[in-house]
Image 1 (spheres, one colour):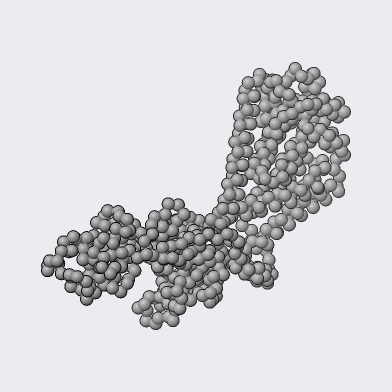
Image 2 (spheres, rainbow, N blue to C red; image 1 turned 60 degrees about the horizontal axis):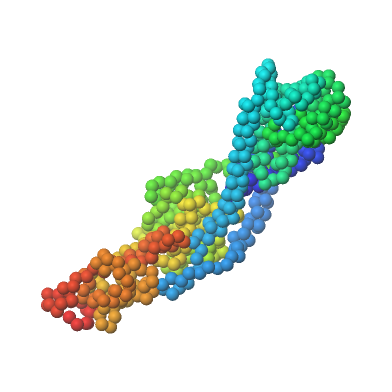
Length: 579
């Protein structure tokens, strides 16, 4: 799934760059530049995975990379995940694996579960952040305000002084005039330089990537650097460094506060004092920035190398007709080129089309069952086995090669058919074109519908449903030749009986009224006026939740036909019973 891939890439980039910053720049004294670097790191980590970077390899190098990738792709097509087999038995006595879109479910199970957990925790942290901001607002609004030119002083019974936005909140009664002057100088720097924005952005990054410990390290580095900036600005105003450090120690004693605010007495007081005593970074300190800049460039290069080479030609739009019209953009893959070439030949047309991202509304009501899906692998159905050509990634393949393709690796699939009235009929008038991805692709709801259809097609000759109507003479003929579409057979005493293979999976009605299957045996063949049979669409019976019975039969009777009246004689070569 794309979102998971982006999350992994973002966190890998964030981890590498933040750790590099912590090792190279954490102890440098160019705090303004460090503030910019921290946000460049965050911006690059979040945005680079989404950027469309041009491939930077030379053409020969790109070809070698692509050929090497193909070697590693092939084993992925035949790897099957190990899972316990669940079986169900149909009325015909045959047993089939109960996969029900094993492809989608298998992938959706773990990926959607991970995304669901991620989303729930992130939502909970976002709600928590909102609640903390509301509490801060209530605290600020409940205090006594004194408005100055560049900030607003809020007097409240808080344990430690802090600033948020343009508000400086403190308990005046806890400090002497000298300490108050130093505290206000410090907090005014936070207000004037808008440090609250940095704090909130770091908090948002922590919410987005709550599962990554480096995100919390990033938040700590941002907060530390903001305190270093404020401390340096206070000392630049001429405040005695030793006196200021003692004030920090006194205010920090037992003080606690929210991570959403800038505090005068921060818990990392030893680091702050150490940075005050540290000499300003010299010329050699710039080497650290060059090293980090080189790492940033290397990350961009690595992502550019990993990008697929930009196609010189725009993807061609493909227009497919189903229930409505869908115009989708498809890439120029070997399969697409072969499909385009085939359709330009004499009297070939597209029977149906599959893509893992097709819309749910796109659906054709007249599909020909050429292939099916069994045990999560494609199969060529027997009626078309010797009249179908298989192409995988544009190359002709043997029919047995389908069994090596799992559904989650199907990127696109075309079923093409040549009209029977074409001047020159191909030896194999059916073609199945499959584009196989080198990595699993997650089908959306529309594609899952097709995959379910393919599973039903492997079981039923009519997965989209079929209905029949029989008069009495039709019934006599069908039961004489044991045709299963009538769903009933004749007993020795010329009564009807539902075939055993349909008995447990069929809704039975006589004259429109539901009856038990056994009730059919009370109907004499001469009483039949008409029989209607139906095999329902796979969407009603091939499902895990509340499936209907697969078949239904309605027998309309005419009791007068049972009388020995010459006007109701049965004239049929398929009936030899008592008139």
